[in-house]
Length: 328
Image (cartoon, rainbow, N blue to C red; front, top):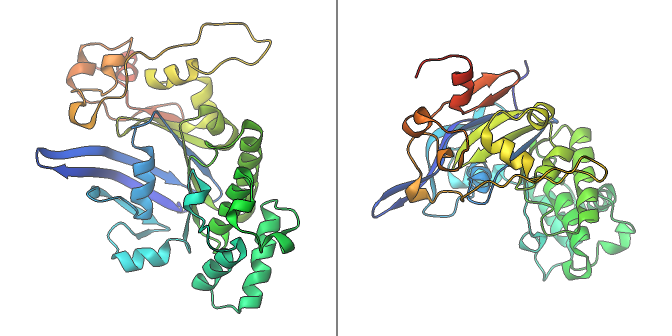
């Protein structure tokens, strides 16, 4: 099997406080291969965005990586000095944020911003970089790119700005792209266009993608595999088809049950997951999901489960061991 583009092992992210360390990401592990889209899904506060920020080295102080490792194409990057990490960002790792206005400088034309990024990572002339910028804008679906390259960010709609940000993220041809809620602020029809564009570009370029979202529908349309996060840990991970058809973890089952059926399907009542995500300073013993889980039993409240293989998926749930007859 070929080496993954991104390999994360036992990643721990915490926030030191006067009362101790608050652990926000706790032992997360996953791989992403070239041309593969890994969807990372979960409620707000699950640790999705913090995981992406840790990978790209953009944790906000006092947040810090307290354990584990991050490897990009076999080379460890979580221990690099800030300057070395800055050289990797943009060139080998691209980033697409939820709000494109946070990535675009409103005082500069979009062409100037893309050209500057290209010339930062490649020794090319301004004219060559300009032509490359036009090609990128056309590739992401901006019509009349040769004239629109002189426009300012405010002259574009939200969907068009997100296309510009995608072009900006891809201009150095990175091996890895981290997309953090890239469609949340967009209309549904525009969301579908951005999702299709993201899939096509990454397949063509063989770019590995970490797609962070709370929307299981976006994951279903885009991802090859999905990692479901809860309270800083991966509750379930596996091929998207397997997880959608037969979710193993009760939290994943709850997320799937909360998605409305398509028109014409048999009407069923939507599932409601009671309660809310625990605070970092109040994560329960055992399985963090046990206070909200309708199938929790004694061992769930005492011992924290490790990932258990079930077919092609893995789920951190004692029910799998219980069903297999493993003693408590």
